[in-house]
Image 1 (spheres, helix red, strand yellow):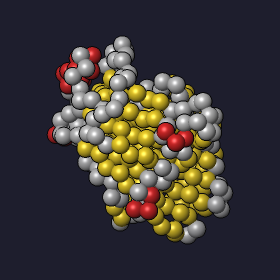
Image 2 (cartoon, one colour):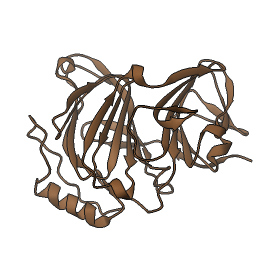
Image 3 (cartoon, one colour):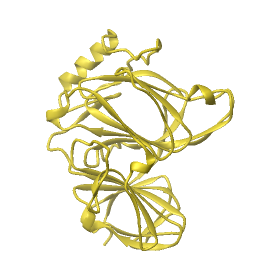
Image 4 (cartoon, helix red, strand yellow):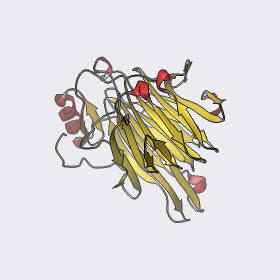
Length: 293
């Protein structure tokens, strides 16, 4: 019997002047553990007059995780952070009661050809921490736990698994794992997982039971402790999940909370521009109209 309960296909979405593939949330699955949002950016070739420019926009009630495969993004936020993220490193920004940030192509790349490819992820905060003070952490690529076993390469990008712990400062039990193999391999990692679990295929393919699954799909497991599959050669997948929260979390635009009143307050504060400012930035993204989901 297959251990896959749901297959989610990547859908296109527009984030300003940049198209991404949206993977979560999905109408049949709003979250996997504490993970509530995943965007696959690119791969995109940007020429000398094309740049990523996401003006200042707010967040509450979540942590964002940015992980690049190619390219570079300059992150600026209302804490005063100004930092370039490069492939393999992790930007982990915790919004708590409120933060504002922008994401742009660094100045030194704005007039040349470049690539951009990566994942942007939102992890909801536990109810007790939704109003915590915002903070920011940057973890370099060489600080991420990496190892090989039976011809398969692993990275524990965030959380705890396989008896290891990532230095990314998470706030609930979770894991975000890269698995890569250049040869066909059968692996069983269920003993190292817990809670809800999803698998995203970046490249290559996997086989589970009698079915073969290709890139741009998220597979949601019925039981994370039975996570077993076959990797085709030259395959890269990402396993993510963890312990789900007991209460429902609502999403409106960039705001996540278990309390709709906090979302309404954030909407009002952003409309009235009382959120903290990003130093050196004058633009901002207006509040959209859709209702709370």
